[in-house]
Image 1 (cartoon, rainbow, N blue to C red):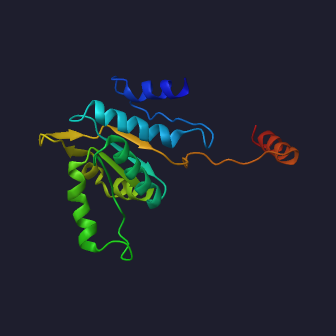
Image 2: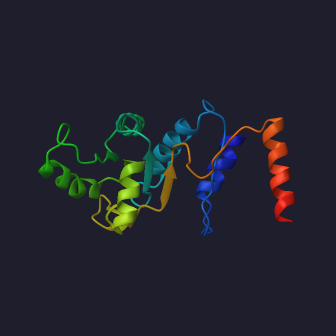
Length: 171
């Protein structure tokens, strides 16, 4: 039921002006769900569906690309690598931005997403050219990582008592 409800959220035609956060415990299948969703959608809508999947690490990018391509039976996913002279040359780094333009599914790291957002160049990864050479938008941004949205901490009796004292001081 959880998976079906999530897929429904991801495929609804109504444009959402706020992000949808799917939160569930580790090991509940969120990463698999993203891979299955992207694979299904690109098979079902081969000339129009496109998405960007964001992972924490380069190894996860590579695993996701391999999994989606294996599932679909052809190369539809492409993984962008950040510049690291031990892994990729400057020329190869620059070339990959041209190569990714023919893949509907783009898989990147959180660091790459942040770099693109901060430099104002997100548009470079927001579209692809389909098999008929028409420009299409990658309309889904699926961030598959532990969100850095909230700081969490544990309350104990003393912490809670100190919090109440602080609140009393300001009220």
